[in-house]
Length: 183
Image 1 (cartoon, rainbow, N blue to C red):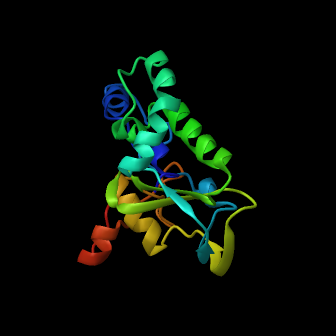
Image 2: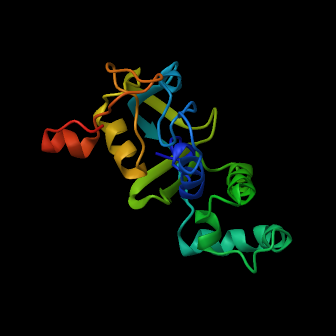
């Protein structure tokens, strides 16, 4: 989910592009290029280790003295949970990960996605987490998990036929459930 978020359509840019007269000769906004699928894999694994749950009151309290000065420098009034959830201040989330990694007794961090509290993110520290792969496969444009993420983020993938300037109709998760094609 987080990997795809950068492709979300910017409503202001979409409006500005729509106002330009003439043929659309740009990559449509809200589409993921088919090139994105090259060398992308998805899988399942069993992972052992100790993970810091960053959104607990204990971690927010422990992180505050270390990250509050940076927050103030970035124009934020304080460090709290909302700062960790903001994508605009990526340096704070990077510093948080570095802090936990530096403690040395954790194998990674756990945090909820900003796209839904029911979506989990696990960041594993290299060479620490014990990973036992169950299955791995290339990401396919019709993968049900991918389609669900695309639906949540309001993104699309070019379909295999009816190409128009490199793009065509797509099937969204909602349309698959309803048995329709979207255009």
